[in-house]
Length: 403
Image (cartoon, rainbow, N blue to C red; front, side, top):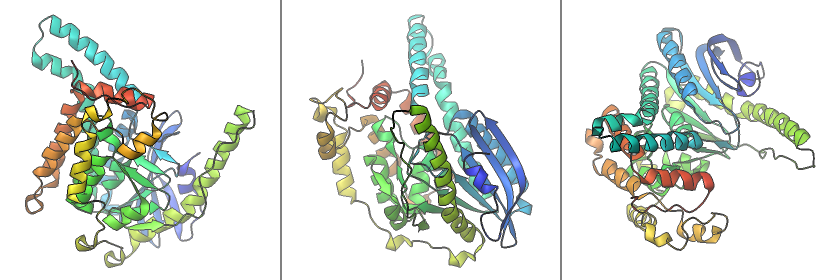
């Protein structure tokens, strides 16, 4: 099996043995497998998700996560740990934005037709079920991971480069995270018109505190591995002493692609040899030996005032009036200086969520439910279409109120 599962099913790690599959789902190149493994005489499971080229978490993959983890939950008495593992590639995206735009365009067309025919507000609202159902699956995934965490030690391995959206939120659902030194996380949703609706805010509040959660969500800045450890999201960072493979341009695209894919396969195994043993170590060591960042020792990415000022500047569409619709590459210097525009509706939703946060009264499940509902409302905002188009076309978004 190509990709990370091939490494998980190999005998390249000392003291590690793969006993066999607990669950398997395959669809074309994508797959999710969960294998029973042993390490240092302790039995656990490794979940391996793979969906090249940017490892988006599509709806079939979400269904596979839920089905597979339900089986793990039922077998928890025979297991001590669960490791969430995947490819060690440059980009891990949250979802397919093109598919979302197609669904939204179709929904808006049907909405206009139904409104003209006098349909009720409730009937029109049901047209957005496709968005609601995906959000509900994401929240169900959070629920089952946290249920498993009551019985097993859950570790996520963040291999490879930058993780966007759901590809960042799923590892955050784990108790402990091991990071590739070249990796990062980016809550890019506020630049599109959404928020991290799969418990991303809730889990970041728990691991990194409210100021860091606000900074990540309200500025959409990429946070690199060393800072992710400093704020408490990563428990450990493994230094990877080699770069990602690059595709050559020799004039023979087919041969270039074949060599690149082979290099990625080798790179995945070489990286796995460094990352997976650290995850297995954390999965089986005494609890007190796991590196943790105390709340009073956390790095602060930016002050509350600085985050508020940046969000206020970037959420005002008029500040970008001279740049609307221009290619991000064309206005690269301006984007470095100003930052990409933020969707005002996203910042407002985040402000409401974070203003109500009280650590002494915090209930993760209820907060996650509110987070999901807030994200669902944003799918219905007319400005969401502008954010999707600008993101896909890599242009400067115009977030003025839509007619």
